[in-house]
Length: 317
Length: 317
Image (spheres, rainbow over the protein chains, first blue to last red):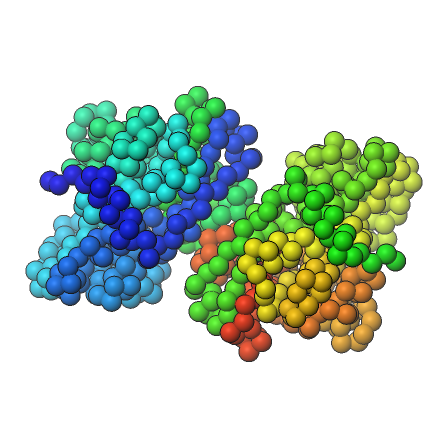
């Protein structure tokens, strides 16, 4: 298992620079007063394809040799990674295959197709997804880009906190949501190198608390089909992300579904930005644990803004 | 009737600088491709109190002598001007009275109170509002700050397009929504001085087309209680705004309710920003009249982001 280094992060930054946005850092006096902290929101909801995932996807796609690239890339995902890999492949002019369960919402399929990703439908179980992916990779020779358990992806995600650090200087704390752990691993990779005193907190839905339980058990515990409004955070840690989480994360903090929804609503209402439920988990965590964050300079990774605007969790909920 | 000058705009800029945000200008490759134009969105939805109105309100409030200020300020409005005047008065430490019909939604009353505005409730007709305001002003000596038919307010709103021009250089065209005409008058005032070749288009809901009809008739025609989702644009022109509209506006362009809602949805979905229906009228106009805007550098005034997130026009509509 290759562990990405800080040099990989710097290389990733140069590699992906033409294809991504350097996203803005926003502040809110209202939320500073509410939490007692000084919050810096790194707005990956304004990122290409609507989420930070495009950083890792671009690093993987543009790091391929011409020969490898000719066979395209493949993944299984129904979320932001699928969009991002399709976008990155499109920019390089190569093919992206996305294995999705045929039960995935039409809106998600349409989004992938809008970025020219080619969908291979399979049965709904994870075993069926993996079997379909394996068959597809062996048939096409496509390069499999895992959504997070991939050193190229983690080095790409790590460029986000590098920008944040450069934009606003040293932070006492960074809070990022945790699902599979790609963003948090990238944050650990960067901060442990350039700002080792910065504490990194992982924010997780109580309804999908596998990282919380893993962190306390000292070994990966997988969740079995968790249900949470933060649909980007349902997946479990893998060995490469566990490497970073187990070594560098100060703590994993849990929030309820209602706390996630409330933080999302407050962000839309006060900051006038569209963020997805998974992103709101970070602010919800800060609001819930003020004793940890008050008086501190806190970076908040706003991971994405891909939301079904016709189905908002505070309406009919 | 005093007509504000460009010197008034420059003075307003210095006067209000400590109390407002210099808002960012955002772009969207997607919307550029869709419209064929190069669009620059001046994001007053990120402004203090959530809308451009705070510019004019601050200019009026901070331009008062200490003696005048001691008596406070007053207005009749149930929208963004009420919030903005309350905010400005709060920053100066003086009183703001807001005359609102007792039928106004509780959410609007709560918003005004959250900025420490004091509400005087009256009957629902415009005559009742004006009578209550008159009584209040004569009793308290408060300075009446009209939402738009006030030279101080127009000079304040004019700072928005001044920033836009400084931020991104000369524009072929600026599009702004038109209700009472405060923002469009300020835009005319600035542009006619610093960039007289820039064409100014006013965007109006077809359901509240008094400015459109006035422009064609050559005299102010008032609307009688128009119904539109763009609730900031229901009011009619007054002599001071008519002065600017009749002299400097290239045309008034109309859009339907569905076109407004579609443009609002698209902005939220693609730009990940929360904008109010009144703001969406500008983009809707550009989408509808591509022959006027394609190939041009177009400034778009995003007037505000104060929306009832629990009652969105694309849900249950």
